Length: 188
Image 1 (cartoon, rainbow, N blue to C red):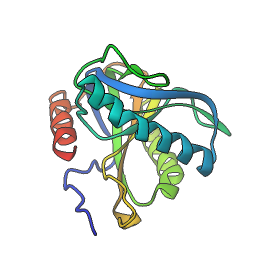
Image 2: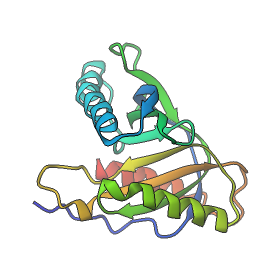
Image 3: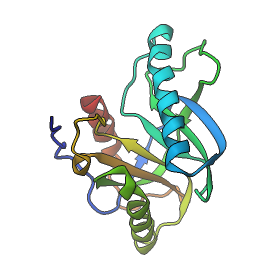
């Protein structure tokens, strides 16, 4: 089974002003940056998350994501979650309300298997710096293409986002965030 990649991928470094987006997440500090630990964290989070959202009457509004609150090293401080249409009042233990931040954001799309994300992040961060921007935290990746056992890993789309330190957006398309919101809705 092959999933078609949407044509609206982000090429290069695209900068825009983003509005705050409510999310529901699981948060972990000091998680080892190993494939085993990361897979276990994501798998347990998403298997608990979707039933909890249904029970709380909250609707997902975009693809799942992983957000880093500090630069990854041998360990990460991470949130795994999903954008939602509002903050639920009652969540099971281990899940909490959070947000994707407002501000000036840079984004690019990576097409390929998850084991290439490290290299993609390195190239993206270099391109952001070369474009004259200063990176702030958090940074996050949005898993636009839903992975499945039958999926061709080379067709997976992951959008990489980083908050920028300067909240000025000389020349960026401030209406672009509306298109991103619509793209997220179309893909969910």
